[in-house]
Image (cartoon, rainbow, N blue to C red):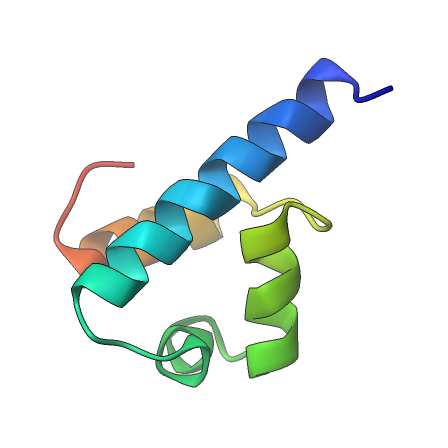
Length: 67
């Protein structure tokens, strides 16, 4: 059973993937913003790892959207 935190992580990851694909960017492109690998970006998008508030802010600014 998923906890609320896991559900939130998954939702954020889903939204991140949709925005990334809409902008025609790769996971490596977003990974460069945070200085992480494309594999790590995949974990964020799948909700396996939690994005920090700072990372979320940087990605939102890069994608020109609100956190």
